[in-house]
Length: 221
Image 1: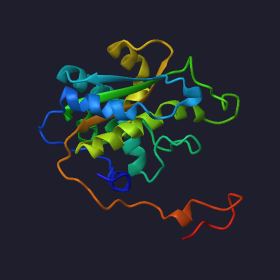
Image 2 (image 1 turned 180 degrees about the horizontal axis):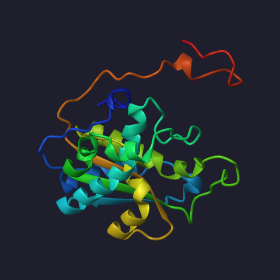
Image 3 (image 1 turned 135 degrees about the vertical axis):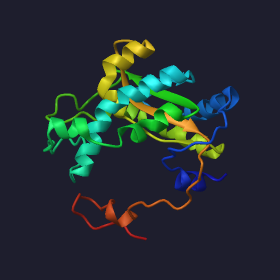
Image 4 (image 1 turned 60 degrees about the vertical axis):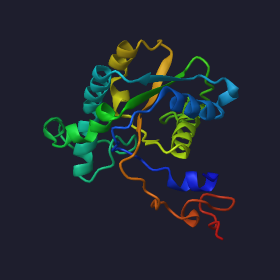
């Protein structure tokens, strides 16, 4: 499969067949994904591969805390978990929101679950003193996750970023034995997609690329 096809058709797969993901396939995926860049080439990413159904179910359960707020805010027309706009919904609305089980189902039902973490002891967080949410540390792990999804797609598999379990990081840390310096970046359910999408909706280049300044002229064809 050509690179451009892989990049244009790697979608957020959330429904999977019963086909297993073999150890050989996993090794092939990570053998490709490991060439992702990281800050200072420190390669502080780590992946915990989970097959055990009880552990997968526990991760899905821990994901419900953040999922409730996500669904409640989305239902209210808000931007869920946004750091700029605080939630306007009540705790009761969060607690009573429907659809949580279905929302986290891929985490518990996928043939294999990948938990990505990054060692904060080796990242260069140059934005740590700015008055905003830090994002730079993600550069040391998210390319690895995306490479994993691209490699999976090239082999006929798929998955999706999920981050709901991050809100329960202390419990996740205990469950998986993560070191104190490791921060969870994402949980990725992985398997054979029930349906492979080939036409993804994305903003055109002209809408997010500009010349010289943020308000500069758009880059067009």
